[in-house]
Image (cartoon, rainbow, N blue to C red; front, side):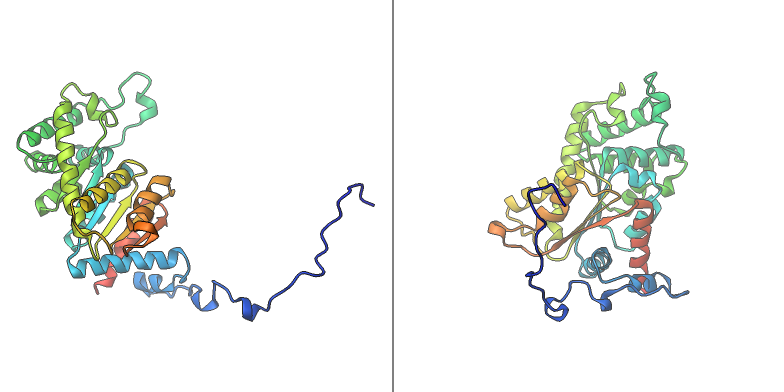
Length: 323
C-alpha cells in the first residue's frame, strides 16, 4: 500500500489511433540498401537512406553539381583544421574541376597553408613550447607572411592574393600542396579574414597592423563581390570555422543585399565535427530567412563528421557524378 496521497493516473480511457491513420515520417522504402561490392562511390551514395543526413548529403552534392553546370559561384570558407588535416590537394583538385570559384580562409588556415608550402610541415606542439613563450615564434612564418602582406597592401591587393603571389616567387618545399599558391596560379580568388591578435604572425616584430587590417578589409570586400554571384543557384560551404567565417559570411550577405544586389535561391552547408551555434544560425538558417518569415528560396544543410573523412567523400561523390 503506497504512502503517497496521489495515485497513478488511470490510462483505461486513453484514446488510441490506428497505425494506418497515424502514418509515419520514416518509411521502409526510405531505408538504406546494403553496399554492393564494386559499386564504388556512386553505389555508396545511392545506398544511403533517404532520411536526415543521407538526403542532406545528396542535396549538397546535387547543389554543387548544379552550380557548376549553371556557372554559379561555389565558395568555400575554410578553418585552419581543414588545412592541417591535409585536405588542400583535394580542394585544389576540386578547384581545377570547377567545383570552387573562390576560397575564404581564416588566419589559421592561411598560416598552415603558408608553412606547408614553405617548409613542408606545420602545426607546432603548443603544450611543449607555450611555457617558455616559443609558441607562434617561427621566424620565417612571421617575417615572410608580414612582408608579403605589407607589399601586397601597398600594391592594392588583399592578403590571399599577396600570399599566393609571394609563394609563387619563393623556393617552396611543398608548393604543389599549397592552396594559396595553386589558387593564385589558377586565378581563383582567395580571401583571408583575420582578427588582430588571433594569429601568430601578429606577434612578430615585422607585423604591420595597418597593412594587415587594410589588406584583410580589402579581402572582405572581394569576398562580398564573390557572394553576389551566389544568387539563384550558387553554393557556400563553411568547413571548420566556428565563429569568424560565419560572421564574415553573414555580414557579406547583408552588405550585398543592402547595395541592391539580388541574393536568393542559393545553398549553404556547414561541415564540421561539431555543429556550433554561429555556423548553424549564420550559415544554415539566417541567410535563407525572408521578411515576416517569408523564405527567399534556397536551403541550408548541416553535415556532421570529421573533415578528413567528409570532404574526401564529398569530392569523390562529385567526381563520380561527372562520369
